[in-house]
Amino acid sequence: MRKNILTIRVDDIFEQKCGCPICLMRKASEDNSCEYISGAAMMEPDIRIETNKLGFCAEHFSMLLKTSARLPLALILSTHLDEIQNEAFDKKNSLARSEEFEKTCYICSRTDDDLDRFLHGMFGMYKEDEAFRKLFSEQEYICFPHRSLLINRARKVLKKDVLKQFENETEALAKNRLIQLRGGLDELCKSFDYRNAGKPLSKTAQNAPEKAIEFLTGKFIDN
Image 1 (tube, rainbow, N blue to C red):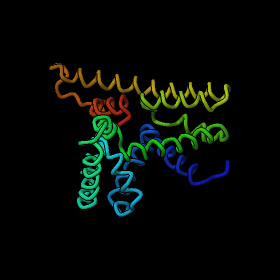
Image 2 (cartoon, helix red, strand yellow):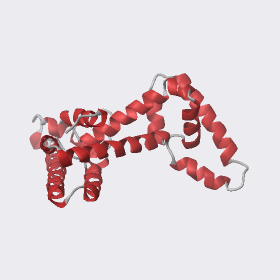
Image 3 (cartoon, helix red, strand yellow):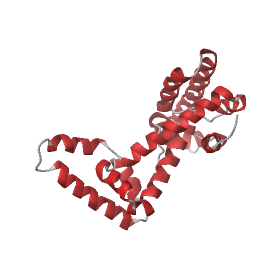
C-alpha cells in the first residue's frame, strides 16, 4: 500500500503496541490541540472566532490550565466570556444559547474530526495491507468504548470476509484485557487479607484500578 502522511501516522501509533491505539491517537490529538491553542493560534482570527463560539469542556479546560501558557489562556477566556455575555444574556432565546455553550468544545470538535480521518486511514490499511492486519492483531488491547466504536465503523466499511476477522480480533483484544484486569483486581483485593501481609504484588495488581478505569472510559489516568 502506498504510504502518505495519514498512513504513516497510523503506523506510528500502532507500532507502539502499548495500550489502546485509539486512545493513544486521541491523546496525541488532544495534546497537539492544547499546544496549538496555547501558541501562535491565539492570534489567528479564524481560530479565535471558533474558540469564542465553542469554548471548551471541563476536561479540556483542565488540560489548558496545566500548560505554562497563562497569557494565551487568559486572552482566549476573556474573548470567550465576551461572546457569552453578548449571546447568552439579555437576548431572546438566551437560555437556549446558554445550553449550546455548555455542550460544545473546540478541542473535542477538533479531536473528533482528527479521529474520523485516522479511522478512515486505518480501515483503508486494514482492507488493503495484510501486514497491517497482523499489526492490528498484535496490539496490547482495545479499550471498552473503542471496541464498540471500531466494530460499528467496521460494519459500514469492511466487506464480510475481512469484517469477520476484524470483529474477532477486536473482541479478543478487548476481552483479554478485561480478563487480565479482573485478575489484577482480585489479586489487589486479596492483598488486604492479613494472611497475605507482606506478599509482593504483581505490576498488574499494583495499578489495576487505574488501568481498569482507563479500559472502561477510554481516558488516561494521570498518575
